[in-house]
Length: 118
Image (tube, rainbow, N blue to C red; front, side, top):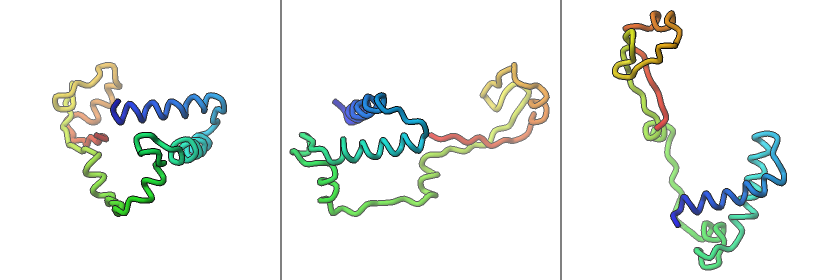
């Protein structure tokens, strides 16, 4: 089983427990998840870690953590491009014809910036 599949199965355990005590807010959900992560995962012995807990393995690793600056993260995870708008499309990307045509006339032949998370 791959790491992602195992992670998803682990999170499913949390979701089963969450169904018993439903969170009403995002803040409450985050609180419940952090508590579950600490008690139900990080401090629970894992067979793949020779019976150690993830917290023990993390604490025993002397490798310094590496943090990246915001510029590096933005460059790695966001894409920005300029496109010119015509009456039917943004460059080669078709625009939905049902959209407000007055808005299309206001931007036609202008350059626009497109941003997306990769």
